Image (tube, rainbow, N blue to C red; front, top):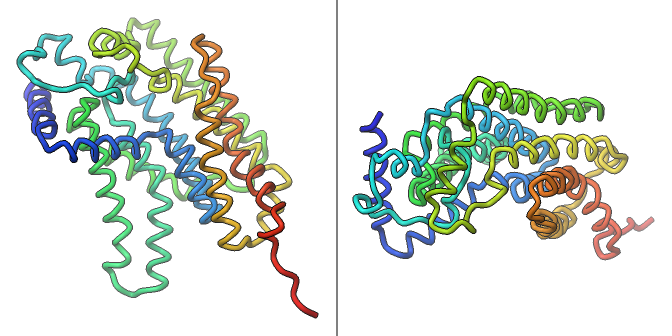
Length: 345
C-alpha cells in the first residue's frame, strides 16, 4: 500500500509542476466537480431542460452523496494526503507540494466524492443527451459523444483532485467507476408520483441511519473524525477548513433535499406543470432566475455556531427544490412578456 501512496505523491508533484495557466484550469475543474454544484447548478439546468431528467439528477445526486459518506466511514483505513505528513511517510521538505484553500477538506479520502457524486448525478443527463442525439443522427459517433464528454469531465475533475492534494489517484479512479455504476443502476429507480410521506420517511431514514452507523462505529472504538483532526493539524491556513466539507454537512444536505423534493413534487404547481409544455424562452428565463437564487440561498446565513449552522443548512436545502419547481416558474409565469399570445379567432 505504501507504494501506491508513494506513486500518488509523485503524480501530484508532476501535476503541480505544470504551467500557471494549467493551475487555473485544475481549480476550475475541481469547482465544477463540487457535489454542491449538483444541487444548485446541475439540478436547475437539467430540470428546465427536462423535468424528469432534472428530478433524476437531484435524486441520484443525494443518494450518491449519502452512500459516499457511508463508504468513507467503512473505508476509514484509506488516507487523504494529510496522512503522508502525519504518519512520517513523507515530510514537507521531502515533497514540495503546494496546498490550496480547496484542498483543506475534512472528509476521508476514498472514494472521491467529487468524482462519485458528480458522475452518478450527471448520468441521466448524459443518457438523455445521447438519446436525443440518436433521434437526429444515425451516426454511432454522435450517439457516443455525450459519454465521451462525460468521462473526459470526470477525468479532469479527478486529476484536479490529485492536483490540489485532496485525493490519491486510486481514490479518484474508484470514485469515477463507482459514480458511473451508481448512475446506471439508479436511473431506472427514480421515484415518480410518490406521496409526501415517502419523501419525508426517506429524509428521516437517510439522516437517522447515518447517525446510528456513526454512533455504532464510535462505540466500537473507530475514530471517524480522524480526517478532521488531520486537516486541522496540517492545513496551512485554518480559515481554509470549511464547515460544508464535513461529512455531516453532506448528510444534512441530502436529508433536507429529499424532504424539499417531496414538498415541491407534491405541490399544486408541480402537479399543474405536468400538463403544461412551457416554451423554450420560458424555460431559459426560469433557469437564469433559478441559478442566482439558489446561489444566494446557499451562501446566506452562515453562523459560526455548529448546531445553528447545521439547522439552517437543512432549512436551506429543504427550500432549494421548492424554489426551482414552484417559486421560480410561478414568478416567471407572471411576466406578461413571456405569456403565450392568444390565437386569432
